[in-house]
Length: 377
Image (tube, rainbow, N blue to C red; front, side, top):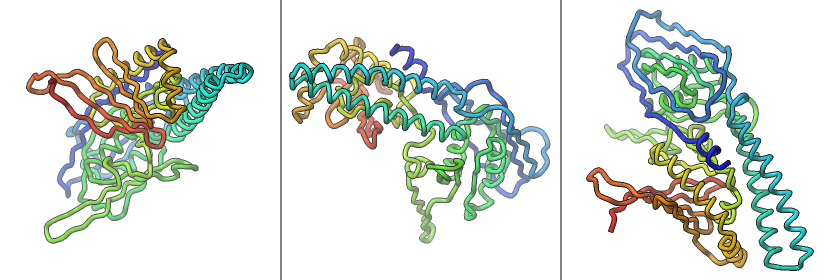
């Protein structure tokens, strides 16, 4: 079960690039959304390419609302629903174990059973919350074909909005001198928005994030100009404002198939690990996910060690659990929720060493804190 879950959710992202062109040229914005049968979660998008051919009519906008409907037919939500069902079964088992421990009168087993049940229930609640968020943001995951030829930000937003059916507003303070020429084929709306915002120095704010029809607004960040020095004050390192919490384009590692081992390790019962790993390659992220899977399987085979670690957690003692796979990749899980992944690697000078990536549990999500290469001693 574990290999299938992780391999089907491998994170694959290609490089994105948008091109800014000089102002005062004729402009057009075109967008056509192609129908699709099914969304492949987090598939590799087609890179942006410049569009420089043919004659065009100034201000022409083409769009279609036919076909693709986001996550509603996606295997992502369906898979997560299956994980909820599995968790329901495990919760029933945990409830049975808890009742047995109560009848037996063993306090150690009783504490362990209570802790496991609490962890599984937290996992289920977190998973359901993630499903609701995925459904809520589904319109932003629609794939579109777009062509922006020397277009203003407002024209680009209009074309994207008509192609996707998502409300996209533009801050009135954004100058018309900001121009975009972009071609994207079957790329997610969130990916196009992020690239446009990044290249234009804009911030993406949510509209109706909690309820109502989801939408976005492109705004100019606060700006300070003193003589010839200009400073912009973004609310987030990425183009997505901090109001989003987890950006819609974040990379995800779905590890809901191994909550038992993971829950014992960090004591928080989190089912989905969201790793903000902008500095980590897709290949490296895939290896990390595979290492997590193998480590959890090894942990499940070591019931005695798990019980001892659980007992230490109940007693309130800090501890670190370290796993190592056959390739030498180690994963250290420390209370109260710090994960360190160490992977053997060579640097650009072909020197032996390893990458050390540190994650911290914040608001139910694993957020990358640092990533460094260390030379072998």
